[in-house]
Image (cartoon, rainbow, N blue to C red; front, top):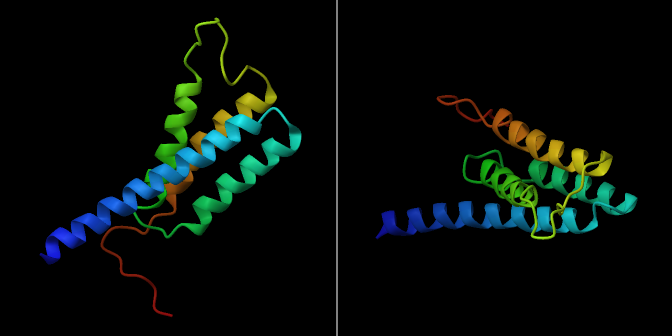
Length: 118
């Protein structure tokens, strides 16, 4: 029974982190054309990656959820345009998704190393 609970908590952590990333990305995409919305989206995205514990079940799923939403915004809409248009704000938002992925993986603890005492 302990294994089932442990797996449930692990999957719950992954799913919640991915949903958080998706929610922040949706808000960022919705507001990215306003200067204050773009700043708020960048700040919220970066703060969430820093605030999440450095574990494989939290930071990478958050960044993947964020990037998945932005990847769907790259798909052409039926009208022939895109949800995130080409321009400084759009490219900053797309670049932020890549930076979040790199930071989420780069800041994970190295395998085989224990956490520092303190």
